[in-house]
Image 1: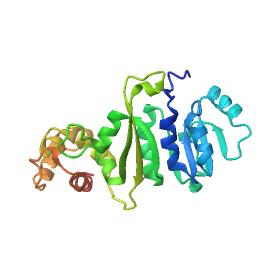
Image 2: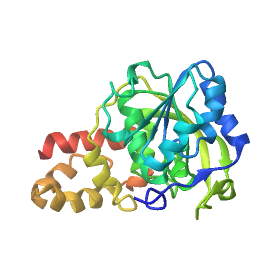
Image 3: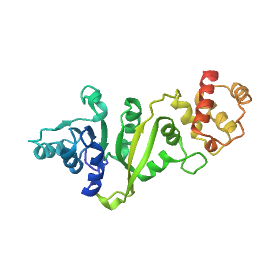
Image 4: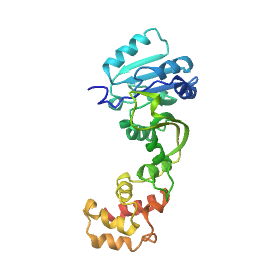
Length: 254
């Protein structure tokens, strides 16, 4: 697979890499997709240990050459999401610090939520905007809801597209992500179904999901009549209000 197909846009600004690396001082750091190693080199100087996973075989061998004598950098040539937790010693990792391909953003966020590991990530700015969006805003989405339920996210710095090679078509941002310790029970399938119709009233949105759920409209209407927020537009509902409704949906309709 070519590097273009892998969605690789390499950070070339050492100052930004240095800002990211500061979060890894004296820590065991997991880096997903080190690419040409600009961030890895910064982490090598300050981190206790760096576990860097590179899928691209050519890049991996270049990195091996650069870090051959390194005592605190471990390189693995693999698809990170096909590795087990023991393969990357995930129980020993203090933080994830990565400039990940945009295509891996959602999978990486899901991984952070599942394993409750803090992270510093460079993400597409539009993706970050949706993560941070509040109810009632244009960017409010399923991602906003899931982020609010599980994570505290702080933008560190905006990164214009000219800081990468090749230059992507979008700007980026570096964010610090800290998982919340509280566990909120929810079904992502139901949240996703509702948020697909976020501009509609809750009543209309639930009715529109009946086909996906293979439930009769009559049964769905009976459920809607018991929901006091049924005339509220979905994008105006808080994450916890959405969870409350979708949990009821699952219990009633399944």
